[in-house]
Image (cartoon, rainbow, N blue to C red):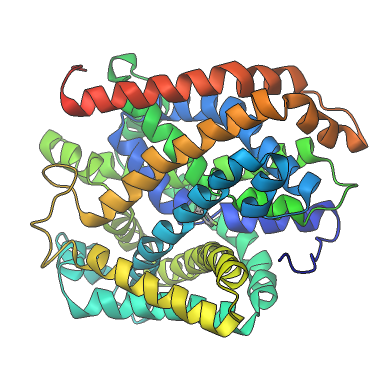
Length: 457
Ligand code: PFF
C-alpha cells in the first residue's frame, strides 16, 4: 500500500531535495579517485559525454515515471507493465548494498572531522596515517557505527526535514569551500602538471572499463538506476518542468564532482613531484585517495586544522543527506512489503547494514587477504563494483527497453510536456531507444571479456 504522498513545494523544493540525494560522497570521494585511476582527462571527457546523453535521458525517464504513476519504484514499474514488476525489486537491491559501505566511508569522514577538530591535522597528513587507521579493527567500526547510528536515528524519528534544512545552508558553503580549496591546490608547486592530467584527454588510455567506470559513477552520483529518482518524481508537482530541473541537478552534481577532482588530483602531482612511482601509486590508490591527499593540502595552508574541520563537517552533512535518503528508501520498501511499522523496519535495515558493512570495514585490515577483484582490491571495492558496474547498468538497460519499446518514449514525452516544451525530446528518444541500450550491452560484454583477459588494452 502506498502511503499518502507529500509533495515538494515548487521547483526549488524539488531541485534542492534531489540535489541533496545526488550530492554526496559520490562527488567528493568517489569521482576524484576514479578520475585519477582511469586516466584523468579521458575519464572526465567520457563522463561528461555520458552525463549529457545517458544521464539526461535516464533521469528524465525516472522522474517522469515517478510523477506519472505517483508511485515509488516497485509500484511504478508494476503500474506501467506487470511484466516489469521485477525491475522495481532489482532496483531496490542497490540501496541495500550501497548503504552499508557508504556508511563505512561516512565513518571515515566522521573520524577525520574529529581529528581535525582536535588539532590533529598534521598527524593526518603524514604518510601511512590513513592506512594505519583503516587497518585497525575497532576504531573504523566505531566510526562506522556512529555514522550509521546517526542515520538510523534521523530516519527513525522521521526528522529528515530538520537535516535537510541544515544541509540547505551547508550545501552552498560546501560548494564555495570546495572551489576555494581547488583554487588553492592549483597554486601549489607543480600542481599544474596534475591539472593537465585531469583535463587533457589521453586517448591511448581509453578502454571499455573507462566507459563502464564512468557510467557506473554517473548512475551512482546522480542516484539513478536504483529507483530513487522515481520516488522523488512521485513527490513532484505537475507544474514543475522536468527537463529544466534535470539539467540543473546535472550541472550542479557534475560541477561539484569536477571541483572535487580539481582539489585532489593536482595535489598528487604537487606533493609527489618528480617521483613517478609514488605519483602512479597515488593515482591508482582507490577509495583512500581523498583521505590521503586532502590532509596534505590542509596541512600546507595556514589555519589548515580549522579549514579541514570545516570541510569535513560539510562533507559529513552531504554524506548524511545521502545516507538518509538511502535508508529511507529501504525502510519504506520494508514497511510496505513486510507490513511492519517504521521502528521495526528501521531496526531491520540497521541490522542488515551492520552485518553487510562490517566485512567492508574490516577489509582493509584483518580481512585484507580477501581480494575479490584481484590483487590490491578490497571487500568494499567488491560491493561498490557489483552495484555500480553490474546491477545498475542492468537496471538502466531494462528501463530503456521498457521506456523505448513497451510504454514508448511518447509516454514520457507527454509527461514532460504537461507544462512546456521538451527541447531535448529527439535526443531523449534516440538515446533511450538505441544508443543507451546498445552501448550498455556492448560495454558490459567488452568489460567482462577484458576482465577475463580476452581483450588487451
Ligand atoms: N548520489 C549519492 C552520492 O553521489 O553520494 C549516492 C546516493 C545517495 C545514491 C542516495 C543513492 C541514494 F539514494
